Structure formats: structure tokens, C-alpha cells
Length: 231
Ligand SMILES: [Zn+2]
Image (cartoon, rainbow, N blue to C red; front, side):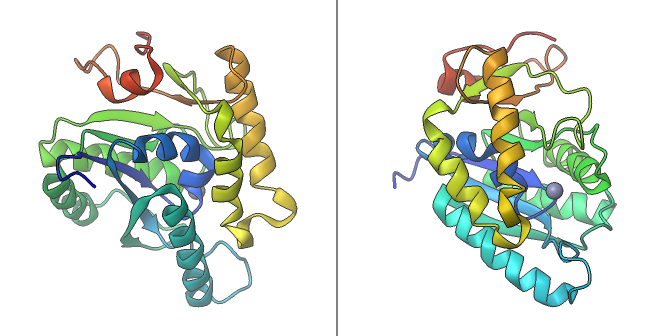
């Protein structure tokens, strides 16, 4: 791999969030960049009634398999599932990592999300990016629109029409979270919905900080051929 490839980071709350929300985009970006997934937690409470340590071990293995498939390195922020807060320690520690990676872009979750871990992890990502001083482009993705993410109207769409197989494989790495494809089916459904908005078969939508962040948003513009529209 050429040494000059820049880094891209995905900062999410749980194992399975990248696969469910932005697997197609992660796959496309891995062709041009070194990609890194940061999970705030190991999804310890994802299997109610089961031992959290056992659940974490299982979900770390599943997330590692998904990251291997998507060509991304995997990192954890060491927080507990369902107890994510944008505390100073974790924001500063992630800022240190971001300074080291100097990413061209950071992808995180949309702050208006009914899952409090998603909302808090979005805050951690944005605060850490600010503390790091990095000039990364910031993109925010959605998770389960209508159930978790609220008021999300994409500024830019990534065409993932040809990547249904990649998305399915990435989501299906999360076996314990996907009985009867209950994670995969809505993930495909909302990509079809975003695709219809963008006149594509399947799309992943992202919010930017336009117009307040003066940025060309070159990372996704180069990927999609389209500049994000100003909100
Ligand atoms: Zn999640």
C-alpha cells in the first residue's frame, strides 16, 4: 500500500454501527485511504441477560471480521455500552489519536439520535476533532431513521447501488445482532429510500457542517462526483 495514503476515521458507539450505517462508503473509501473504525464501546450490553464480558468478546470478534471485510483497522475507546458520556478524558484521548492520524475526513453519527450512546459518541467525535486541531472534513451518518436518527436530511449521497453484496456481508458479520436479518433488512430499506431521493438504486446519505464549515468536502465529492448541497 502506498505510504502516502491519508487516513479516514469512522467514530461510532457500537460494533455494527459502521456496517449498518455506512458500510458501502467505508468500502469505497478503503480503495483510496487507510480507514480506521473507532468504537466507543464493545457492545457489552447488546445481548440482554448474557454476561457482558462474553458478549463483548463475541462482538469484538464480529466487528473485527466486518473491519477485515471493509479493509479498516479497528480501535476501541474503552467505554461501557449504554454508559457513553462525552467526558473530558475520552475526548482528549481520542484527540491524541486523531492528531497522530491527521485524517482527511472523520465520519461520525448524527447528534439527534434517540440512542443516547450514538448522540454522546457524536459529541465525543466532534469535540475530539476540535481539540486535535486537525482540519478533517466532518461527515455525519444515520442509523435506523425513524427509530433512532431524527431530523436527518442528507447533504450528500454516496451511490452504493453496486455494493449490496458488500453491505450484506458486513452486516452479517454481526451474527448476534442480526437474527432473521433484523439488522440487515432495515439497513437495506433505508438505503433504498435514500437511493430513491437521489435517483439511485441504493445510497448512503451524509450530513456536513455546510455552510458553517468552510470546506470543499473533497473526500466525498471526489467519491461521488457531486458537491454537497448547502443546507
Ligand atoms: Zn449503535
